[in-house]
Length: 358
Image (cartoon, rainbow, N blue to C red; front, side):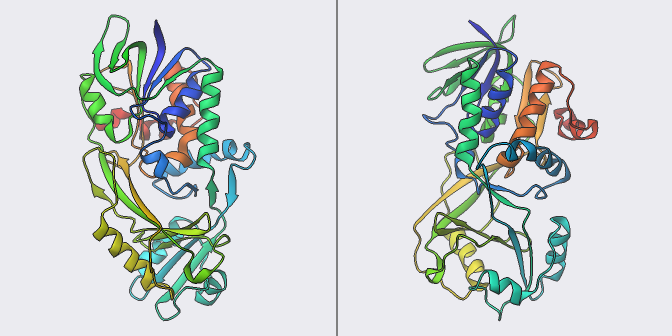
């Protein structure tokens, strides 16, 4: 049986696209791992801060807000705080202008996060326009919609071959072959590899590792009401999570696609940058992990039909913005695949098109 749409990749990009496209035809989704959202999607900071990222990302994220707000309990208040120290004024002012954060002063910041070190932190800004995303609720909602509409979602289906056929594509996996008219490449860090397998020119995506550690609540504080904190210039971040803190060095180290793990030295350096800004030392780690944030050459998402092979569709380069942009990105993908009139601006569609890479 030939499906209308075959999606490679079971992260947030692929699952959301499956949900949208399942309203327009038959869908098969192939995920290499034994569970969905195993890689980058399963290791996200899970924050909706719609002003975070380049202009095309911000437009997609803002356009996703109505979908998020329509799902009960999907978003919960978190807030965002930017912190600076001596010599960081330019980076601090850039960040607070970019993300529209009013400066509040160090004393006000310490009233919210009492562990901030007044001998080091010289400037602080905070806003409430950031929310935690229940990523499992969002993923399961998209998966449920897709399955309800008859989509076939297959895990443990690693792609071993892709061939062009008279009517579309044949994709081989260890468990069998699957055919479809349109192939949607939502394979995360592996998108260029999938393109090469299909005989389509890769676009030059770069997977970048980002390491994270979970540490106990500093000083036994109740951290549940603390905002997510960034060192200006995104040199580190810390976010409350289930009674503990997630701390990241916020590194971007280019990597080949793989099941990523944290680098101990990079993690130690990032924890040291965090520790410099607070009064409570890190005495132990509860756990650590890493994910790959995959970017296109210009760091914006790629959504559209391949210029040379229109039946091959790119849904790639989510970077660190996959969850917060997924409702609008998947809807745009479905509109472009099916020929519907997109609600997003023509300038945004052009900024996301693979044709921009020539």
